[in-house]
Image (cartoon, rainbow, N blue to C red; front, side, top):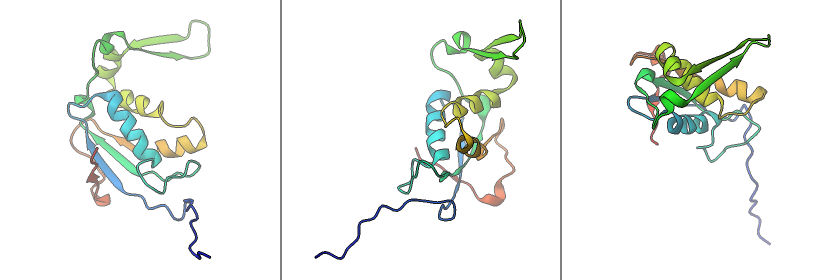
Length: 147
């Protein structure tokens, strides 16, 4: 009889080791980079990934204003908001939104790719987006993430 046990290890919040990664958005495509960032935030790049546990890492994005859309999305993509009141629907194109708040465009892209529940809200808090090349997280010693 074989005495080896092949049990699947399930991660929990005490056993998760988190790292800090920095991603330079200079010239990157927003949608493609957002999918990769969402996977890192969730922890899907780790062998110890557990769906019901927040086992992802922290992500810092710099140079957010230098990221780009492909094709004609800058003019065709529309962001809608609705206040709940009659006539309260507002729309902005991606160009208007990106010119005013490039951070919001990237956050919205990543937020749409994580779960819409309590776990997703906890995961989203580990994302930090900055317009320039400067960030205040030097003490965490972030390392570049290899895609």
